[in-house]
Image 1: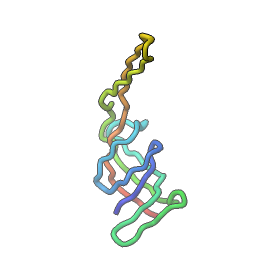
Image 2 (image 1 turned 90 degrees about the vertical axis):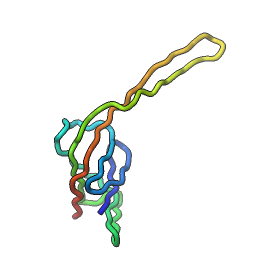
Image 3 (image 1 turned 30 degrees about the horizontal axis):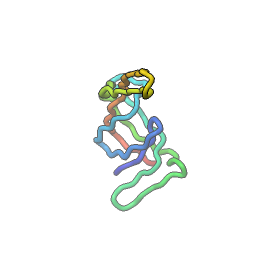
Length: 104
């Protein structure tokens, strides 16, 4: 069984036992988290599509860790003006292990 969930403005295709990397969640490592916005759920022979989400469906998972991604360098400049600015950014993320998919 698999499902497509929305988390942090993005959509993820998940199955039980998968580990996904989504945007930061306000939960500590080891705690349970529930995704209520299930867009699609299905198995080998049937597919349930929500309009826009499936009522009563949810996906449960456990937060494995919260960390920051690799640094991305952002370099801005204006040609012929000696204006240069370099900054960095590290995007925070959470790794979640999917434990259970519940359908209505």
